[in-house]
Structures are given as C-alpha cells and as structure tokens.
Image (spheres, rainbow, N blue to C red):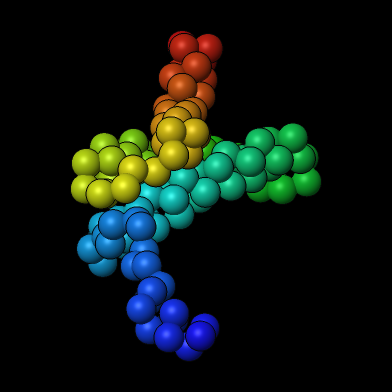
Length: 115
C-alpha cells in the first residue's frame, strides 16, 4: 500500500525559486565582503589597542582594507536585492548595509577630528 502511494504522490519540488548561478555568486561575494569588512574592522581595533606591540601603521592599513571591502558591500547590496528572486532576510540586508557603511563613518570621524 505504501508502495503505490509513493508512486502517486511524488515528493513536491522545492518551494524556493531557483536562482541563477551568477546571482548566487554575487550573493556569496556580497556576504564574503560583509564578513571581510567586519573582520578587518575588528582587527584594526585590536591593532589600535595593541599599538605598542605591533607595527604603527597596521591599524590604518586594516581600516583601509575595511573601507574598500565596505564600499564593495554597499555597491553589491542593491544589485543582490534587485537580481535575487527570493530576497535575503531584512535583518541580513540591514546588517550588511550597517557593516558596509561603518568604515566610511569611522574614516569621516577621524578626518573631522584630525583637521
């Protein structure tokens, strides 16, 4: 009996729409850039706190890395939102935008303080 039921009721296909490979690759690059920005900001803060033990220019270098990858996040966010059929959760999108804009804000504050 279970054998005939399995033939008549095949498993339903996935409910999520299939994404194109290029869209998936862009989404992965977006999330990798977000995490890279977050890690570079954290490493920059750690290098700043341990300033006496490491190279003096390391915090600025890591802040530059986080600024560049943060700008990549800001550029990729609208592209991912436009191209994906199934949108990422709003919390993930807002987290990525905030992480991407934080290095820009930090650099702006540093420039305002130093001038």
